[in-house]
Image (cartoon, rainbow, N blue to C red; front, side, top):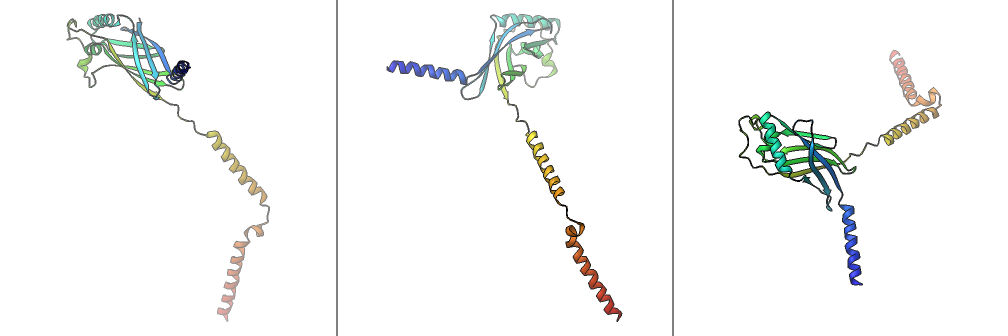
Amino acid sequence: MALTMRVALFLAINACLAVLCQGWKVSMTYSLDGKTYNNFGDINVIQKSDGNFTGSIEPTKNLGETLATKLKEAVKQNPKALYYIQAGPLLTSNSACALLKANLAHDFAVTIDHEHGDFLSITIYPRGIYDASAEDFDCSTEGTFEAYKPRLVSNVIVTSVKELPSPETAAYLQRIEEEKRARQHGAAQDNRGFLAKYWMYIVPLALFMIVSSVMTGDEGQ
């Protein structure tokens, strides 16, 4: 009986974790000419039980060696060559030279809409190269990079965005319309005559004129 309860508890915990830990996976490709793309691997984003998101890269087999060779060939032909990464409809690029100088250390910054399970943006950075100058993106003086022993490593920085609540425009317009109808209704109900509406202004004016007339008559006598 105790064993059965433990098994049931284990299954329940795994079911809860499966619900809490949502995840998305997108296949990525890379290119060095912006035309021909090869398989890079998958980028995975997982929502942990604490609500935070973490990401990881699953590269294809032997990608590091293949990528290093192609990057060296690209910068040999064009020292300012670009390196492209595509994930679904999203595209990012950076300097092939800078990536070689970073020893193939990739930093991926991704933005996701976790409510809809969508990737909104992806950006690739050569790790460790932050305040880069123009020389960092030009490998014309670097030779053939034969001394470089790049090793593919990657890190994923995940930013989650939420859709802002839409303004209650309908409720606001309805309230304005109700106030407008109330004013119109109040104006329509006031059918009093001129004297009935403005007697509080007419009476003081009449008294003032009478008093002024009396005082003028006394001065004349």
